[in-house]
Amino acid sequence: MSNGGLVISLLGPLVFQCDGELHSIASSKRRTLLAVLATRANMFVPLQQLVEDVWDGVPPPSAENLIRQYVLRLRRLLESGTGPAHTVIETRPSGYQLSAPRTEVDSHLFRDLVRDGTAVLRRGRHEEAIALLTRALGLWRGSALVDVTPSALVTAEAMRLEECRGAATELLMEARLARGDHQSVVDELTYLVAAHPQRERLRGFLMSALAATGRRADALAVYRDGRRLLVDEIGIEPGPELRALHQRILADGGTEAAPSLAAAVEPAPPSRPCDLPADVVDLVGRNALENRIEAESLRILDGARRGGAPRVLVISGATGVGKTALAVRVAHRIAEHFPDGQLCVSPADAETELPRVLRALGVPARRIPGSMQEQHECYRATLRDRRMLILLDDASDESQVRFWLPLGRHSLVLVTSRSVLAMLGGAVRVTCPPLRQADSVELLRRTVGGERVDADVSGFRDLALWCTGVPMVLEAAGALLLRRRDWSAHHLVRRLSNGRPLDELHLEGHAVRCRLERSYERLRAMERRLLSWLVRAGDPTPPLPRFAAECQVDPADAERAMERLLDLHLVDVQVRAPGEPVRYVLNQVTRALAWEKSGAEGRPAH
Image 1 (cartoon, rainbow, N blue to C red):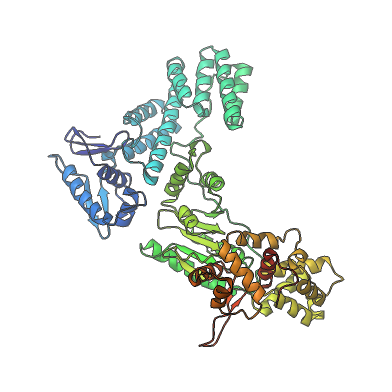
Image 2: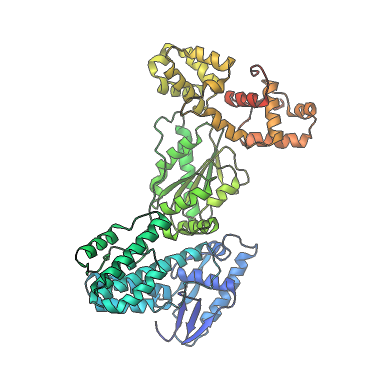
């Protein structure tokens, strides 16, 4: 770095040097803004992105105006010197850019020096490598961005810089060992291993240095201590390089430098997970809907990358109607538009899913934070600039979706839910309806075989009608007929109509009752009461005001209960002519479950 002009320093407390004089920034928001612009030096940052970064996703209403004021004050500070003004904050349409030579932002200069040091070390030029790496590490004045208010971006950037710092330290130790400085590095390596006990390369270098100076027993003790730590605290054995070095020391002293330059200086390139379930082969009757969702997804993606459109598409529908299969099919069709990977997440189980997802995204296990809040910040920051497809399967409510939304605009989130998620602002919504009768018969044909269906066309049409177009029920009925080859489709329809259909359809791998009960358990007392009344009322159902009158409940409470049943697709609205009262319908399995839960005796009314 030059003494004149301007230098912005992020490798420690955030300061800038102007004409050789150090300056700090008192305002925490302006410090954060400068940190965001400096980490993205020479890159355009949209105004809305700055708002999200500075307030970590919870901005005040006046945030955009405040950003403009902060930029104005930062300009005055940065341009106050008499030296050459290489670094400036440029105003661009809808955003800003910090234009600066890489030598005037210490984090960028650090990375450049480490990159150059790595290159010469690979070519065996140890003296040059030591000089470059020593200069790079000399830029550090403490922990990166230590006085910048933590946020998803700041935390992730600090983690990346600290990881690079650790890798650069390992490279410097390797270069010094290759030069033959075994004795002089023992004390430094002893300190570094104590400070970073899980970094196996540092432990290997210390073992090599000790063995080279005749201290084989101490080198073996370093290995034993490291192995005990890894086994007791993490449950893993040391890596193959460290185990091989241990064997060499046991055999002949192992004086060569341990773990070679296999580890990169920069953190490993981002993982590109392909975490989608297998595509569904027998998806029947959904071609038009697939095409529509694919077109909507790509339209959303295109608009989002230009800065204005939503990034979420919700596929809602009744339990078992095939939402997940449809979402998985579309996800596979559009996966090529997301080169940074695809994830499938169960949004309700954040405590288990967050660590798994972070590992899939390439975050080393030792770098995954302990608390869920820190893991969430790491998740959002890791995804910020990636082009990812994220499938959230079976979201219960809007808060679960918001939790998993990435901060950047380059990703698309596909959501399946029994709810329409009406309060999720800006989302595009598609309803997955039941199958038509012809498609239902085709699904049964693919399950039980064409010959059997052709021999009993009317029976299978009746069975398809009973199943009301719900693939989960159709598949269970088909599986039951496969098992009971002595039953006809008509016979199964009679059993389902006159007995306990959920018991009949209870087969391994077809947990119809279990999946329905998950929806039922989300209902409040009034909603369960209304569902039970609808079942008892039969088809067509009486108007809703009659429920309020018969059950002596507030009509407004009855309306809210019906709104909830409709939202969860437990009840649907019957098509009616203008002027006719609204009637409600339930599919057969929902009716059967509600009848069981109501405690009524006898079979449900039809």
